[in-house]
Length: 552
Image 1: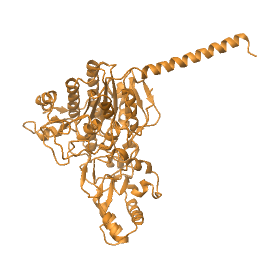
Image 2: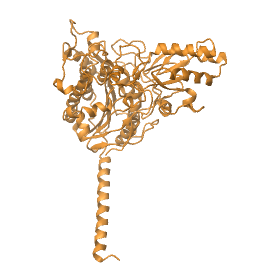
Image 3: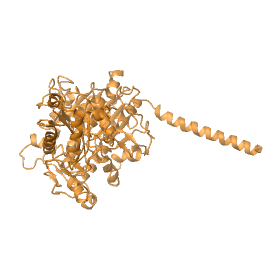
Image 4: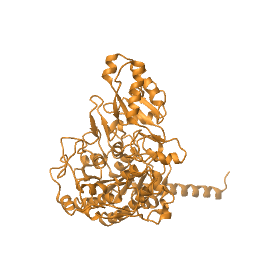
């Protein structure tokens, strides 16, 4: 039997624990009930692997990426769940919360399985860029996006809400902006930002004023010099490696050898932090011109910074140029955040940063480390596949073309020849898996579940990638550290389900809504959309497959 003292002590301890639990609950509730943010600033660094944020943490400034790491929340194991980790599928996933199997965006481009004609992810010939030339297959509308975004839900709930997408790439602006937002794209030919006639007939005055000031011209003859002394880059590959594309050395001057700014100069800014600086300046103009975050109706500003992807393709994420670009971008973000604090108010907005995919190491770099790595020549692969199928099933053609990291078969010929399709698929698998750079192949029947696949290693990722009306007949997985690219124009690439391509940062900042700290629970990029919908007080996008992120 307990003594009176122990009874009193037990009761007091119980009351203390209950009170502490209630206070903790209230603190969490208070943060979640802090009201809606006036502005969600959704930042995408195209092609930024998670490891670069962590490995260069000691060299970051105090208030760029470190704002998220030190005063916000970040996830140590955040990934994409689909197999073909390309730019458009990633941008389509972020704010819809849906995988390509629902968004319909299976690649940057693909071939129509029926006609084999090329389709661009945001291509729509019904619309053109405003005051700028429109190339064939240029991205001008979200017509191919099959589902709604957080911004679409927000605008349906209150038409006064504004949703704006900005990027150096059409897909980087159009897909996050959704069906009812407005997208603006940097024009590499003119150095201006333009929307398309899908959104409006003519630009608002603030866009015209921004463009008329010719902001890109101020970088004519500007030099990109390393931000830190040479020893600081010992952890990255030196300049001018034999496998780099042209221009793989710092410092480099933009517009060198040119008399005045022109299309070549304007396009050259994209693979640099100068192109990112222009996108952030245009975002500042959008905040002022559209009065974003200035009232109680929440707005969304999505900014996709394209420079890192271009740099990594040309030189590899392990290069000094990529390393320095992370640091340059870090300083640009710090300046942008300072402006947001001043114009929106530091307690009035949520900032989120992620990436559309990671990046594989350059094959030659991997080879220098003793890895099995290389480049799989796609035209020769298709030729060998067709010849192999002819050897077993007779005269072809059995193969049509390459599409979205896979192969379109000649289905008309297969039907007319009365060959057993499953037998042909099994033979194709055997031929393809004999190639040095291929580790997996999945047919339509594999991912649709009509037959049991030979391997399930990447089956779930393939199923999340597969959209029947657009996906290829045979979906291919590259062997780790191999790339589907024979040309040396690209030093490195992405597009696989492997960790170096799928693991990306997910960073949150907004003290009224988000606590501080590292979260080690595995999460997916599809989880961002339902989390933002909760903060904005709107329904989760209807096709979302994500769950609320376990923010601290």
